Structure formats: C-alpha cells, structure tokens
Amino acid sequence: MTTLNSPRQRLVAPPDYIEPEPVERAVESTKSQSPSLVMLVLIATVGILAYAWFLLNPASRGDWLPYSMVILAESILIAQALLSMWTILSGSQDPRDFAFHNARAVLFHDAEPVGRGSMRVYDRRRMYLDGERVSVDVFITTYGEPLEVIRETVTAALAIRGSHVTWVLDDGRSDEVRDLAESLGARYVRRLTSGGAKAGNINHALAISSGQFFAIFDADFVADPEFLVETVPFFANANVAFVQTPQTYGNLHNVISRGAGYMQSVFYRFIQPGRNRFNAAFCVGTNVIFRRTAIDDVGGLYTDSKSEDVWTSLMLHERGWNTVFIPMTLAVGHAPDTVEAYTKQQLRWATGGFEILFRHNPLARGRKLTLDQRLQYLVTASFYLTGICPLLLLLVPPLEIYFDLRPMNLSTTVFTWLLYYSGFYVMQIVLAFYTMGSFRWETLMLATASFPIYVAALVNVLVGKEQKWSATGDRTTVSSPFNFMIPQVLFFTFLALTSVVAIYRDLDNGFLTLATAWNVTNTVILGSFVIAAMGESRSAKVAARAARRVERADSAILSPKEVSA
Image 1 (spheres, rainbow, N blue to C red):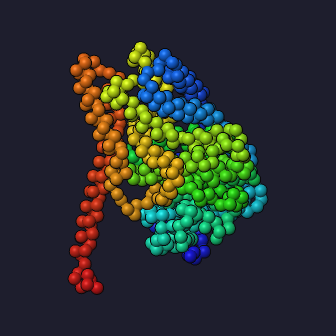
Image 2: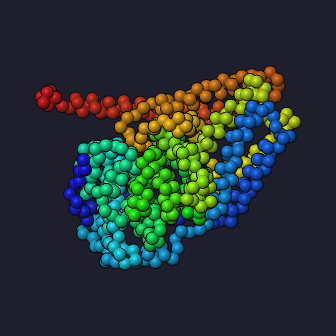
C-alpha cells in the first residue's frame, strides 16, 4: 500500500517554521594539502615501518603464543595505517573542476523569489544542467525516530534551495509521521512490507517517483539550504553516479556520542577526499545525491546487505561509474549517543565490510575495478579487523602475569621497546592533534571496548547469520546499556583482578613490570567505558521516573467522568 498526501508544494513556509542557523560549509580539506601534514604523514610512515621491522626482527622474538598474537594484531594495524597514509597523501585534488564551476554559475535561470511580508518563501527556482531542466526528489527515510527529530529534518529538506519534491519514506508505518508530513507539505510513502530494509524502502520510492536525481537523508540529518546548489553541478559530468557529503554530528554531548563522532572525523576529512583521486569514494547512506539512471544501471540500491551504501558503491564502480566526495558540511545529524545505538550501528557497518571481504573479495579475478579501487575496497572491507586487534592485545599482559609468557625477548629493554612503539602510536596521536586539534580519549576508549561488536559481526558473516535491521536513531524501545556490553564487563572484571595480582607480585619483587603497567592501562580504559554506561543507565532511570511523574500528573487532572468516558 502506498499513501500519498496532496501533491501540492507549499511555497511559503509553515507559520511555525524557524529558519535553521547557517551551517559552516567551508571546504574542510585545506589541511590535506598542507606541507606540514605531508611531513607528519611521512614521519608517521617511517615510524610505522621502523616498528614493523622491530617486531619482525628475530632478535626481538619472545614466547611464541604472545608473540604471535602481537604480530597478528600489529600487522593488521600497520597495514591499515600504511594504506591510510597513502590515501591521505593522495587527497590534495579538488573535485570542483571547470565543469562544476561553470554548471554552478548557470544552475538557476529563473529570477530570485521575493518575500511575502515576514514569511520566508522557499526558493523553488528551477535548476538546469546543460540547458536542460533538472528534477530532484529528496527522500527522508524514517523508522521509529522521534517526531520532533523528523519534523526538524523534513522542515529543513523543504527549505533546500532549488526545485525539488520532498518525500517521507516511513518504514515505521506511523500515522503520526503521516500526519506530520502532510502538515508540513511533504509527500508520504508507506510500504506493506519492510523487505530490503532501508535500501528496499528507497527502491520502492524510486518506483513511484520520477526525479532525474534523488537525495537521501536519514531522519536525524538536517540538510543545509545549499545542499543541491553544492552537489547538483557535479552531474554536468554525465558519468558521475553520486555525490557524497560528510556525516557531521551536532549532538556530541556525552562520552559515547563524542567517541563515535570523533572516530568518523578523520575518515571524512582525509580518507574520503583521498579516494576521489582513485574514483573510489563510496556512499555512506545519507547526505548523498544519486543520478537515477546510474542506480537503474545496477538494478537499484543493493538490498542483500544491511550496509547497502558501500555495496551499492561497489556495484557502481564495477559498472564504470564515477563518484565524488566533497569535504563540505551540508547536513548535521545525530551521532549514536547510547551504548545500544552505537553497538547496533557498528555491528551493521562491520557486517557490511566483512560481507564484501568474504563474499565479494575486491582482489578476486573478474572484478571490474582498477588496481587502486581494488586496494581501497580491500581497506574498507578489512578495516573492522582492526577492531578485533584490541582483543588480542588485551590478552598479552595476562599471559605474562599468570604464565610468565612474554611477547618480546628478555634482552629487549623497556627503553628499546618504547622507542619503536612510540614511533608508531605516538605519531598517530600527533596526527590526531594536528588534524582534530586535540587527542580524544573517548575515541581510544571506544576503539578498545568495541572488540565484541566486531567479533560478533565477523562470526555472523562466517556462519551466514542474518542480522536484524535496526535504525541507529530508533528510540521506540530503550534498554539498559549493560544488555549490550556483557563481554566488556566480564573483560573489565578479569583485567581488574589481574591488575591486583600483578601489582601484588611487583610489590613482592620490588619493581614495576611493563606487563603490569600495560594491564592497568587497559583496565582503566575499559573501566571508563563501564563508568560511561553506568552514567547512561542512571540518566535513563531519572528520565523514566520523570516521565512517570508527568503521566501520573496528567491522569490526576482528568475528572472521574472524563476517565470513565
């Protein structure tokens, strides 16, 4: 069943419309072209290679079990780091060429709209490419998000400059969302089934819409009015399939949201721009605009994975289409701010990556990709293996503390080990300071504590277990964060007890060992994650009690007659 409200477009904003504050849209790639960044990346690369040489040097080899665990984990981390350095150094190319600027200059042919009293008038001027009128659909996918969040997103989408039709694609089948869409002047679509999850939702909308281009926004991403102005001109190149913009977050108000948000920052500022050079920038599912004929060419958005964005990008690249990423904030959304939301998001993303690695290996013969694209997709598909590495490294100190098994040769001094170790890890921190302005401990915490998520994703792919779709912003149910972090709590307890044993042993021996310091550090990092979950749980209980008080107060206001009615 498809339900559409009146197809009219409201040119005047609703009375309660509040124009959003302007978003900083400056291109964020200036540092990627900086000689200072190039120098830091080269120094970091030398540090990575030196650390790799140190680990592989037979003279450094310790007991086989912990040594093998360290080599496996660090090899994955080193390989990813080297490929990331290479990609960052490739990111000086600006995708805005002459064709873009020329198309942008003549995008609008119609006169500027005029205001009507104090009311804001939506800029619905027609857009043109190569003298031909452009038609655009703007899709907002919803699945149980709060009404106030959807309202803000739909209102902003309606206010995007340029002629377009805004659609609310509601897989949550909510009458309240339907009424909201109608009141704001957006079209509303509801499916009978939820097959294909988000990709199926969009494919269904494509079957009943007709725009030459379509933009996608998650329900919690508020678009900037200039979104179409900054993206549509790229389609002057007839081979461009989509234009992707970053995921920028505006709710970095707690430990989880800050950690999740900052984890993505380097990717959007440096890695994605670097992939433009290799025609390997991929879609991230929101804040993106597609050419319909490109999606038709690959049979619609990919529906056999919960990571439909990366898979669709891969299919497009294999068909010879070009893609563009612009490091310009054109929509601001919500990072996952609870343990549950973060876990579901990462599980979905990691599953998609592992699916490509094991079911559609980009290095396999027959893949119609360039060598650069193969390497970039290999990095993408194997990236979440780095999330499993902390599990191996967390187990190394206990092996020495309980069984006297050391990863490094006893003749290797602590100073020597720290020297090479710093060449790898300290330089990563220096790069973080340079690119982000500071080192974010929340990112380190989440990177260390997320290994159960990535292990679960890997196992799901290997055994073929189907993952249930769950939107990151779905707040229809709220669970205790500890329901989603049992492995982390057990590991923290084990490491805390091990630290006690190690400290007692070192006090008895009269000197502090590296294994003890390493284990205590790991305990503190995991402990900070547990403390964050405790704070989240406490806040949720306070909010629940407040909601119950409001509910009781509302019930008390009703008269007995009203209650019986």
